[in-house]
Amino acid sequence: MPAEKVRKTIEEYNLIQNNQHIVIGLSGGPDSMCLFHILLRFREEYNLTLHPVHVNHKFRPGAAERDQQFVEQFCAQKGIPCRTFVVDCGRMAEQLGMTSEEAGRKARYDAFYQVAGEIAKERPEAQVKIAVAQNANDQAETILFRLLRGTGTDGLAGIAYERQERGFSVIRPLLDVCRDEIEEYCRKNKLNPVTDHTNNEAIYARNRIRLELLPHLEKKYNENMKESLVRLGRIAAADKDYIWQQVEREYKVLANRQYTISDDGISSGGNISEPEGGIPKAVIMDREKLNSIHPAVRHRLILKAFGEIGLDKDISEERIKAADQIIGRKQGPKTVQFPRGYRLTVAKGKVIFSIGEVSVK
Image (cartoon, rainbow, N blue to C red; front, top):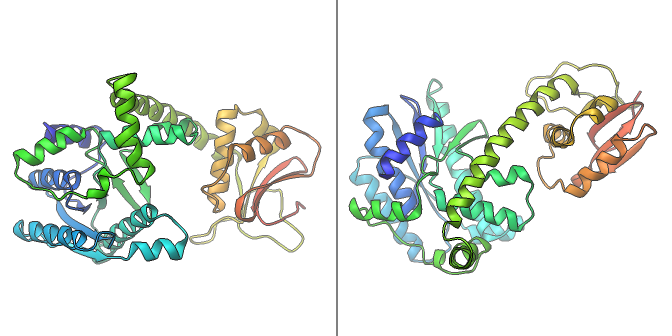
């Protein structure tokens, strides 16, 4: 059953095409072993070249080495080389000022992108994708986690089946398969996956949601809570996709990109041609036109403009509301400060998204 669900997901969302190279994160746990085994079954059908990657985070001395050995031996039995990365994620977390969970995720994705990049460099004609093994339970937990943190409607879409990052597609073919099905698949196929005991300890917020909150909600309020959350995610994802289509359409009309700024300010005229690989120094929009657009689209236009000049996270609702207020007024100039030195300025009928202070000529 999981294999057929994965096939349906692959076909419905066009996740895998013939003759592709698939970098797959292989921890040795049930999810990744299930996905790897299913892709092995599909290998001839799609003419796939699989590249398993294992990351030893050094979080669990002894157990981490056991997991690494298990994965490497399994891959060797299948005749497929496994790339292993050993990363001291505890030290990484301390050096970068992040949680150990965040450091572990960074280490994994850094490894995946490195291998994907090496394949693309060695085989310029190859199509390379990265497959990770989040499942339907992960989707429900993610949506609930975001709800608890006060997400916007885009966040309710949860985990995407496919997303683009660092020049590669990250795909999640297992996203429609629940954890019980995965564990049963592993039993039937005698995969004997390893178990990370920290997954059963309520030491992270995500673990507490999985081990405590979701079971409580299912027992006391809705026995189909996970299914309800996944359904909410699908509905929100469709709405998000439609709204962002409108955003892209409006952005093409409104956004003027400035790639150079003179000492006395920036021109409020049209686009300056983009240099090779250039990132705009500023994005300019007409104030009245931006103000006339529905808030659902306007707020995302603000996010997209800041994202294009380098600010792609940590934008609060409070900052968006403050931006809305000055965009709605004819008098100026007015400025709203955003994180890390970015700012939105309204002056001379224009809305300027920039890093640092600029003036309009």
